[in-house]
Image: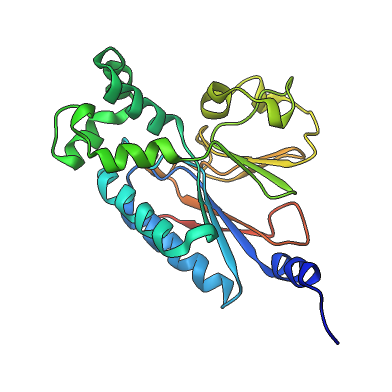
Length: 234
């Protein structure tokens, strides 16, 4: 029996596992171990990674994390999605104007400069700054809406402001609105180190850079909510 191309594509998508990974913040060891555990969990099935941003700042290995992400992008192509976080946004702003440098440094940019062996954001490699500029703000797979910080509940998902996508906390965290998608986000570290699943959203920033775990949420093509989580603690 012949299977038409559309049906074949739908079957492939239903078999693909998606691993969404929260805020990394310069923790190379944790993200490398977490990626390896996700690949082992897939057991040869097609998989896709969605990284929710904040690759840099606070942790010791920001440069190495960025280089590792760029290598993954080159190797995995469309099977890896890289979103922008507010920390990449701050680094870009600091690289464009020294007026913006203070805010970035106050939020952990000093550790990023140390990892690059430079003294200002303007000295960061242009290739890495261009990669920050290329990062997507959102990814919608039809069931989930992946974003760094969250969304403005008063606006449709396709009419969001960039600042909210990168920075919002309240009133998003308390909103009960049904978005028609599960909003999967990071940005707000969970004090208990556990993912926070609500009817309309999932927070997987479990405070890795503050001593918590780095978390991946596992999704399949048949259900909207995660089917499980993988965490790396050390």
